[in-house]
Length: 199
Ligand SMILES: [Mg+2]
Ligand SMILES: [Zn+2]
View 1 (cartoon, rainbow, N blue to C red):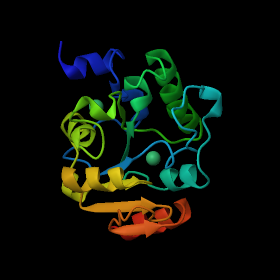
View 2: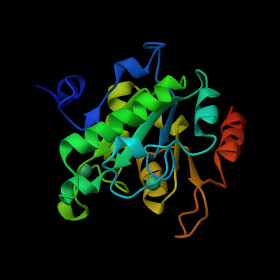
View 3: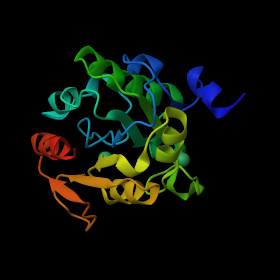
View 4: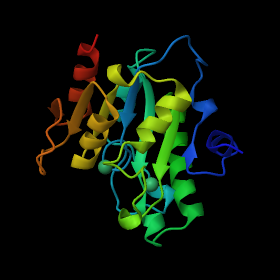
C-alpha cells in the first residue's frame, strides 16, 4: 500500500481529501495556496486537542472563498503534540476533521490537508521548516510549486515555502522572528488583496 493509498483510506496523517475538491481534477498542474493551520487558518490554542475550540481567524473564510479556481488551498500543519505524547491520534484527527468541516460548511473546500505528527527532534522530512508536506502535496495533487504561495504566521512556514520552491511567501501577523517573506500582512483582508494581485 502506498502512502497515497493510506491517505485515501484515512489511516495516515497526510490526508488527501477528495471531498474537499468539488471542482474535481483539472488539466495541468494547479497553483496552490499552502496555508498553515494553527495561528493562520484558526486561532492558535497550543497543542489543540478539542474540536470545540476550532475557530477560524477573522476574514479567513471570506478570503479563501474569493480564491475561486485561481488557487487550490492546501493545509500544511505541524502537530508535534502527537510526537511529544501530549495529544492522541484520535484527538489530532478530530481537530483536523473539525477544521475541514467548519470551512466546508462555509463553502471553502481544501484540495488537501496534511500534518506532520512528529516531535521536533525526530528528524523527519515533513516538519516545517522542512518542505516535506508541501512536496508530498505537490506530487499527490499535481501542483505547480513555482506559481504557488505559502502563507503562515511563523518563520518555519516561510522557510518551508521557500525551500519547497514556492514563488511567493506571505507572513501573516507581526514579523517577530525575522522570517520576512515576500510580503507581510496584518490580517486576512490584506492577504486577500495580495492574492488578488498575483495574476
Ligand atoms: Mg502557525
Ligand atoms: Zn514529520
